[in-house]
Length: 222
Ligand code: ADP
Ligand code: 5GP
Image (tube, rainbow, N blue to C red; front, side):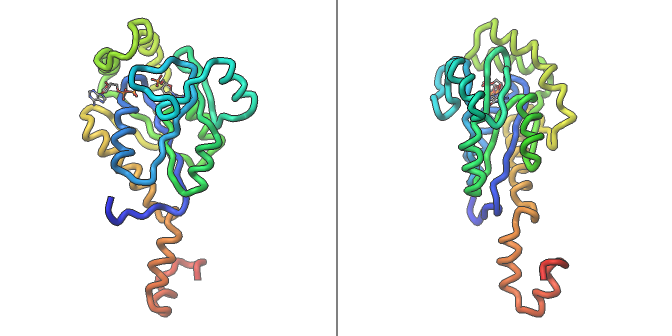
């Protein structure tokens, strides 16, 4: 994106939605379009799907290793989802945010609630299906999960959607291009908030002549 400047500090974006709604697909598209965004690869005890790369999509761990990391406090949040353990590793997220890069988490409702407590500045988005039946159709079309896994995931759709009222932004993924455009719009708007753009305010004001600067600066900033 030509001419795009980054905010003063990175923003933590939390994305939640039922299985098959299109989170991974939309996040991939977003990352290709908006610079300075980093996807946080979670740790999980579930098996890799075809095409998933260890360390890129997830850190695939056995249950003992996962539990030891929980005990060591390595996770920003963690939860059991669809009978497997998932968690966000704290260190890479904090490091990216400190360096001014924004981070995207693809985590479930329980994890999002934990992040809301520990990281009040995070922006929470829920991705919704146009109809619940679309989820099962998409999971079958994705063809990465067994029948048993698909049915287990479908049984937990209502549990994930029940948190809909807790989110800052809702994005319905009916047409993928439209939904990705809305997601991109939310992310760019949040990154453009004046409260996150102190250095841009200073840069603009420093170009004004001193008398105009005194008039233009909000009270309290000289
Ligand atoms: P999630 O990460 O939420 O589980 P995925 O991104 O893996 O979901 O998407 C599930 C399947 O649905 C994939 O095969 C994806 O290509 C497909 N998909 C994503 N968005 C749409 C859409 N708007 N319409 C139809 N299929 C979609
Ligand atoms: P999947 O197995 O389809 O990749 O992910 C299953 C569910 O686990 C999705 O709802 C996804 O958002 C969630 N998930 C993935 N990583 C994490 C994580 O680190 N923490 C939590 N709480 N949920 C996660």
